[in-house]
Image (tube, rainbow, N blue to C red):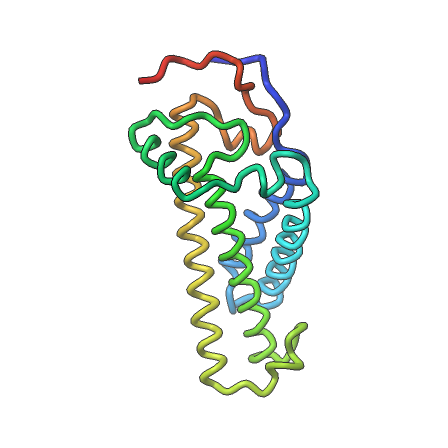
Length: 197
């Protein structure tokens, strides 16, 4: 069923950031050490995108601001419980679980990026941290690599949960949330939804 009454929710920066982050993470994840120059470039772009998003989280449009999707733990728990029973409340911006996922993804991606910079400095004597980590021991290099791989894999795990959440919420509220991150528009809250149990 097509709903004509839509509102603009996601500004161009949020949408470009979202899909840019998807692309750079995929490139970085699949290249690893085999194509180090591409892997490193993707990591730098990813870190740049995250840095801009952190700033935009404080000065951006309403639904881009962190204050718009910061919820209490009890709100997140209630929302997840309601989602299990397919009766979760619809939010025009990020719902409590989505907001929490954004913070988790950003934290995991930042840790992945910084450990990547540290490995690049320790193993290749290159990058902004090279002055501090050039003479690192093998133990340090190994520990950094293990930590980097852990957070890269943890990020991938979070991505799968995020996709599952988007699919479930799209089903519950009969709207294409992925499409809204392309167009920037969502169905307005005042439009009657199909009856839910």
